[in-house]
Image 1 (cartoon, rainbow, N blue to C red):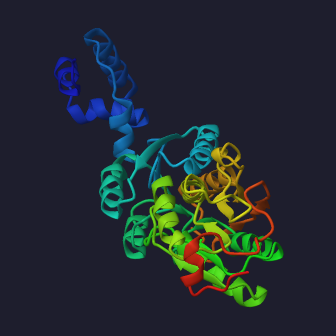
Image 2: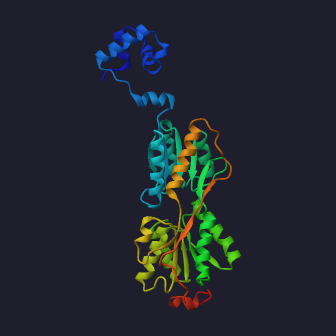
Image 3: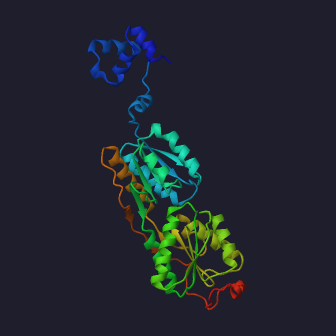
Length: 342
């Protein structure tokens, strides 16, 4: 392929003049520009739009980072981000950090030169690392609140309170929380919300974990729960709740007759398991769309609002995995658990 230097030599001008002809035509004499364009056409020279974009940082590309692309909770976030970005003429570069803060940071460092802004979806990086990257490109965080960084989060406190209220109204006390990853900001907010709600509702809660935010993590939580069972369980997310539900039922524990299970996020699979999962529904598509609107405003010059996060409402979706508390805590381990039997 002919280069800018071939065109410059054939037209008898400097390479910089050829560059200005295609990138800033108003700065080149009209006759010279016409000659350069004619020579370029004869040689078959074509400008590289991406290379030109990189020199001005106007690439119409946004980066979206998620910790695990196989986790269904991110499907609708990705759709919300892509739909809102496409409407504004932007394309989304998707980064899967595989639950690793190191991979997340390294991937972003590689993406920084070609993207105009970043949406962090449930980041596992430290606050300091996030703020450092935000100094280089506009950024919005989803499911994570970081000082000085605009963020959009679901109402975690309200969500876990509704879950605990629901179980408490059914007579479950105490309740087990199957915790998420140690580096998860959302997990910290949900556990804090549960502890606060526990005091107000007079329902005891305990924590098992941290656990991987996967079906396998739910299985690990179920094995620990069987050593000291309670009649009510709240999972960090739906995958953890589903893993728990599947394992305990395979061990002869009935849901909801022996134990009631509540998930979080309302992924599509929550309605497909047996029994269908009671869960806290989060508006994930709205989270993604709101993040992109905020990010595009920054790219266009708006001052980033680094105050309290934008909080979107959640709701409890009741299905068949919850019911009245049984007379006894299920399983033989209950007698030595130290937890009050009903």
